[in-house]
Image (tube, rainbow, N blue to C red; front, side, top):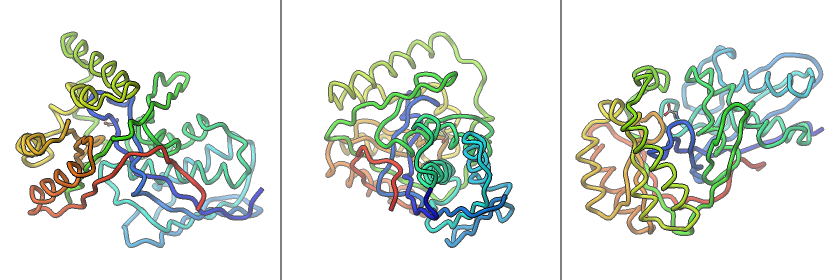
Amino acid sequence: MKKKVTVFAPASIANLGCGFDVIGLALDEVGDVLEISASDGDGISIVNETNIPLPTDTELNVITPVVRKFLEMISEKAKIKVRIIRKISPGSGIGSSAASSAAAAFGMNQLYDCPLSEEDVVLCAMEGENLASGGYHADNAAPAVMGGIVLIRGYEPLDLIKLPVPGNFYCSVAHPHIMVSTKEARSILPREISLHDAVRQWGNVGGMVSGLYSGDMALVGRAMKDLVAEPYRKQFIPGFDDLRTRVMDAGALAMNIAGSGPSVFALADSYRTAVLTEKIMKEHFASTGCETYAIKITNRGARVL
Ligand code: HSE
């Protein structure tokens, strides 16, 4: 067993349009950094060394249930200290809670010389997601641990499938400075959808998986449509439809809400288009302020620094 590890876990985009709670991808260039150490004893302490405000009550930090679950799964007791060194803003829609949860689960596994499988590491990370959003979804946590694009084929038991990332898969992402809580964004969704919408949605999920395997980015773009969450959530994002028209006119293959929002992302098949659509997003959200990124999607997930 190691005394201390420093780990990184990336931000992520959940849903990818059609795959509500079942598809997500890692955004390798943005993420959280944690230093985790263990000593004899019991209990968890968390020190936030960033300037991002986080709950000071340890019980309210997503890292706590993740660490507890990990120790329970390997039947160990220890005094765990976590230093949060880098943090994505909570409520961003690019998997802030998942990045912390994935870094905590992955880091604990590294600290103990990897007793858990990758799927079990994701299971631990999902405890943090449950605290943050009131649901055990893995479409941020799985890509944050595993990297690339991940399909959650099933939850009971967890069945994770890493999908291929085409070589020309780029995204522009904008995180407007608006607060949308995942809990609220989930609570407004209807519990049932019509058969008509379900048929379109699963057609798109199949289309997306097929497009990723064949490297057909136009097909991936056509399939990146959401009838389940977007119609109810886009009200939280000022000018969502206008922005989509503008980025599509500029050559994007699709634009959707990232996870539960307020971030949005546009799909592109070249870095040039991603940069162009990033600029349009920046202008669009000028009044609220925003962070933007133009990113090539890779297969890199959580890792030791
Ligand atoms: N699939 C989840 C949702 C992701 O859309 O609520 C939250 O980031």
